[in-house]
Image 1 (cartoon, rainbow, N blue to C red):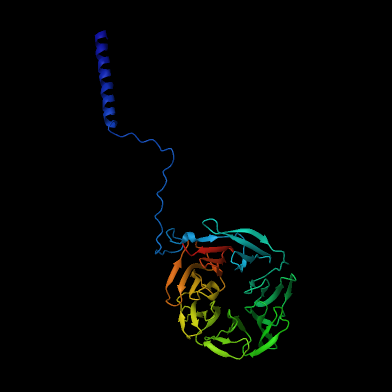
Image 2 (image 1 turned 30 degrees about the horizontal axis):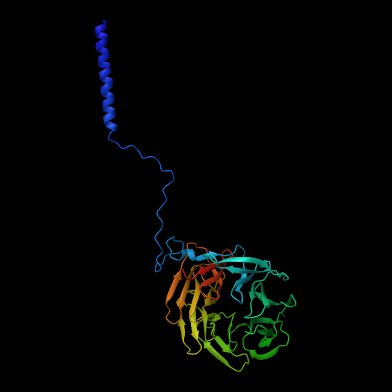
Length: 384
């Protein structure tokens, strides 16, 4: 092949390569190049502020009050109670040790500080503590195979004194230095008053039933009582006085169980079993007017507390499970005006809250409770 032919072939080859390169460039030159990755990942936009009027189901992150439930202890607490001065709490653990802790309100959330164990003799298998309205003594309650027994702790002597097994039920007088109790012997029951260790007792009256629970009003002027083992359709709530001179039937209809006095001693809550669902509902009774009404909350008195105005009630209301059956529940929390029946619901992200042993701080803006699901002490900030 001569040189002229080789030159022609080379020119053709270069022309082909150039044409292909131009076509490739034209195809991709109109596209934008990808932007370089940012130095830090883009953060999601912050959530909108909560709507105070919104209500959602438990576990929904849009719940308006979900951040208001705060866990205070990892301990499994027993019968937590507010200090007399309102600056802290006392509680027992499962082994019968007594602890105290102070409130720290310096931050945005309340916390417990200076947790300390008090040097008292440990008493195992305590079911609950009966705290008096005043004084440093208390009564420990035990429950063995359905049988309740009690032991009085004398703070000055630093010792427990077991009460006689004939004591079937008891409650503190407001003074904190006397108890009222039901004495059961030989198939007969009587109402008595005595020192907290049952010494220096006085007989008040015989009682018809042998299974009565008693509950003394905060002013000490009235005693509510009701049967605890009745399986009848009707279970009355009755009233007597510490001198045994007045006896009245108050709540006569339906199956009723448990009572909770208002701070002014003029009203009380009670649990009534709803006939169709067989679930307990909270009801209200006014001693002055005789008014009785359903509060519309499926709960029991052991999951409720009165506010200091003797008008407002806070209650843990099961959304899963039933109050009064002994099993764990999952609760929402409500505030209800007993005069108007106006309700406000407090909800949480977590679905594992079972409110028991409810009490309020002195200011009435924080609701404390023992969470039966994990045993911890929690509080709800009512201002959020």
